[in-house]
Length: 581
Image (cartoon, rainbow, N blue to C red; front, side, top):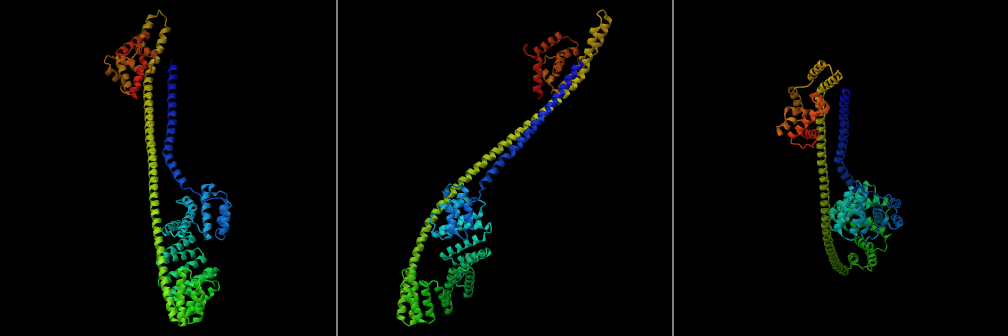
């Protein structure tokens, strides 16, 4: 019997250790799941944002080959790009790059590009990405198309966007081209000072890019702007000379002769260096001997040099070619100078009047054209405003959708945090419950251990009594007396009842309050059942037989208002568990 009690006690200790291991495992698992829930939503949002910005440039070998030769052979680049069948079926990155490089090759050949549909594919792809170089080129090419359409405001807007992209990567040559176009747009609108500022920026960036050929063009436009705004003639001459020098070094004959002609015009109108101007014009005239512009300029130069025969020679060559108003204005002005040099003042006055009449017509036509452009620009601006409003509406919709997505994500995070909190509370409750159960079990076993020695002694004396001969009455009475010493009195039991109350949250005390009919003897039986002592051990420690115990249990059920079919032990253990936890 002693062995039996020890075995039960060891088994309970093992069971408690197993429960602690299981509880620790579940707690660790819950901690891992909570950490995952905490970071998984922000991680998914971060991945979504990164993927939306992760656009790449093409790796298509044919497109890359065309791009590599674009600078020196745009015509060949166009031919290579056309070898790709159905480019619209290419992946998005490849098709955007194809559209960009194809329009770029046409632009470098000064081809007329009327539709902006292809370049817009590139603009839409590169817009808002980290591919600043290609986004800038796309905006620049779209600006060039607008400029050719004479849609100045739209062109300005696209060039501004290109400038912003190129400034982020220090693309000096591309920046210089943007500022060069700004200069032309401002000069066409007669904002000469603004044009001059942009041409200076263009020259600065062409120089940093070591593109001296294009730097010569920038110097020429700087000189023209300074000449038109009344700057000191020495500064104007300096910039013309710089332009001539760079054009000559680059062996750009066309630009060199244009610079020379512009320089000659300045010398004729702003200085008395007519002979130098004549030499410049004759040098250029060798290449453009059929140009009415050079005929008129030479006629004026020879008139100022007082060489009427030469002046009349070039004037007569220019006279047949007066098909446009501009040609008539230039030719009649040259004729007035030539006739004056020849002494034909009446004829000179006649050409002066024709010059004045045609100049007024030319100005009127120019103004009419400008009014038409203003009207067209108004329509374009109106369309741009409508497009801008549509973009704002779309942007607001995107912002709204994004805001709703953020709200949903915040809601998910909030719910996850609540779930995490509840799980933490649950696990804390479980831990506390397990701790409480362990403490209760520890106290129960401690109290059980106190009774164990009495139970063992009682059982041992019962066994000895059974071994005595039946006729040894005196010995038997002595044994009964000794056995009685191991049976606890009601007063001694009260301390055990108090300990049971202490362990199980005053269970017996509360039970007696609800059921006043319960006696001290009933409380003792209830205490032993609560300590999960079996009926045999209970009988031994109380010194009664099983029949007496069964009757007492039935009496307790009656006093607890329980049905006879109810298992008293099961009912009490269930009640004590509910009351304690």
